[in-house]
Image (cartoon, rainbow, N blue to C red; front, side, top):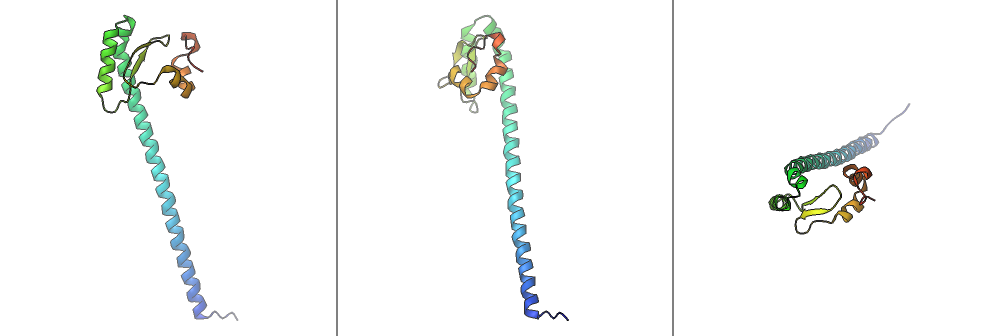
Length: 134
């Protein structure tokens, strides 16, 4: 018959508890990592949504001034946008990609289109004169 000595049984039980504790700690680390990633994704999505809302509002506000080539109103809108603490820079371009107004430190259109070609093609398709897109 199989005789298991009490010392071995005690060691086996300690090993099982140790493995269970280690597994629990690993699962907690994995869960916290997933939670952190989901939080970053939600923050990214919220930031993108907010920036798109601000962009649409600014575009709706700038449209009459851009259509009438009213540079002073466009400059004033850019100045108001620059005063907001969450907006890093602002620039307004006409349909051909010519700069109408920009804040201090605004990135040039060539640099933006080089870094984000898919966005460039979305907003300036070749049919509208998006020659600056790469």
